[in-house]
Length: 267
Ligand SMILES: Nc1ncnc2c1ncn2[C@@H]1O[C@H](COP(=O)(O)OP(=O)(O)OP(=O)(O)O)[C@@H](O)[C@H]1O
Image (cartoon, rainbow, N blue to C red):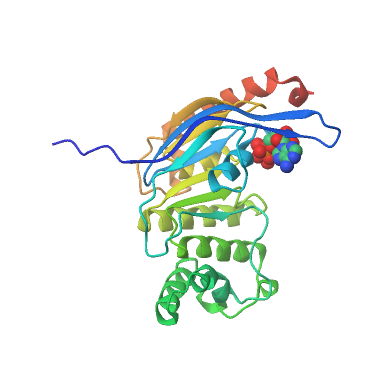
């Protein structure tokens, strides 16, 4: 018998969002976004700078309100009770807490008993290779290590949906590859639904089940590209798969066509 299709986790319907600049002129960020994401799916969003990727993520996370349309998240309560957890590009660790206290912060706030909290923290600190630095403060860690703390904290929260906005955007290429590898491992072990914003096509292909390409502003869904590369994936070995190059070209063509068509971006 064929497997049942995975349940729908996030449904975005008819989403629109405009902002007003200081002078009062409107900026249309998103127009008529429709998107369906399955439970446990890893979906990346790419598109030209300013096309509304962050705005879309913020609306899904409830940080921003849409002008029209809805976002529905089918929630099935977990131990944490947390629906979404977010990792941003800018470091969001608390400088006054040690690495392990940062990872356990959300669990503490939600009143998880200390012994259970320690178990979860130990597990994730270990997973991101920071066991030797558990008592270090963020100022004593490198940028890549601090971002690892953010990633460990996000997974430790056991959210149903993980929202990641360019989490590795500020990191050097080597650290970025290592962290992509870690995300792949963590996600395969703790399947949650992930919505991941990136500018990096390699990153989108390496991590995702599907890639949503937004058009230049106002962002609309220009294409949704399935990434049917086998898992488990290795960030480097994957690149020699012939399909990888084809996907890269396909995404690049879509983005180029759009940037060329948007006069303000082509200038
Ligand atoms: N709070 C705000 N007030 C006014 N305009 C905003 C606000 N937030 C976003 N915008 C505008 O909405 C558009 C989309 O912004 P957004 O940050 O979502 O794009 P993005 O695709 O994430 O960009 P980038 O790839 O450069 O990070 C941009 O033109 C931006 O200037």
